[in-house]
Length: 433
Image (tube, rainbow, N blue to C red; front, side):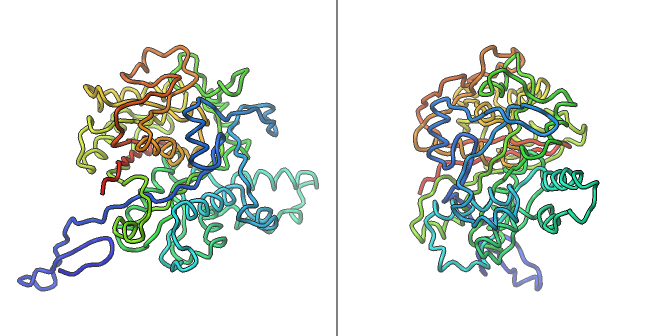
């Protein structure tokens, strides 16, 4: 038997040149979390505010759009960067740098002696660079559109790999650092990519998840408004209302969450604290509409994730929904969840966007982080702002407005779906030695 990190394989001596690959894939675990959300800048503060029912939405003035509700982060951008680096780089890059450094700090690894060529950075994102181009056009409009006033920083700011690239530059990481453009499924997909690369033995430590700078581009607000999908409310804290009969659209947010992920044997060898184990996942596509979700494909996505994890639906205690508070999208996901989790009396349903809005590429990673502490405290955070439940969204065990204590949480399934029909489901389970 020959072995390499991540996989094992056998050579069959009777058939020269033929390798029979064993399914002894390494177990992948979460050992650190770095995040910034509209209602918290580390996992402790974030979780406390989720359990306390504290949202993080406020009004902001946006060019061409006026006053809109939005999720704005208030992290210390200069904790890990100099002023010049923040000025030259992007908001998405700055969020990524903050989250990556926080994840490394949180996981307790000896960063100084870590071989940086064996570290991978996998950042999911929705859109990137829009804000930079918008700002440059606005700037040159003041000078009769004379392009000599166009910033020479524009190109490195707008390339798709910018957020991961800024992490690589900041932390001197020489391993693979790139982004996954996967719409609003990107946060989950960043974690899935990291899991796969760790199992392939390509890296020994992965910093992975998703980021969003969406509030800094008026285009995304204007686009949702033109679709009739931009939230409005006189109280910004109540603007994000998944499943409520009066919901009227998405609250656009910024934010980020990057995890430190390792192979189990490496984490155990260094005595790391383990926050959860990647149990299963699946990615598929609707192939049916640009924006309207397809519940059949969502059902298949959750089912395949359970199959990969070797779990039954009844083994899941928490399903964190993607629901964005759009009239049709919430209903479609509820149809899919009801199909998968029928007759599961010990499975509870919640939603994190009701607190933080829709952080686009960061959504899946941040929403998973909101539920990860459930393995320790046994609490299911609520869906808030749910005053009048839509009968079409009346799922059994939907946790409404107040957190719920349950006997034990062993597994969380996190849904994250995106435009053009990309779906992801990620299952994380309690780690038991």
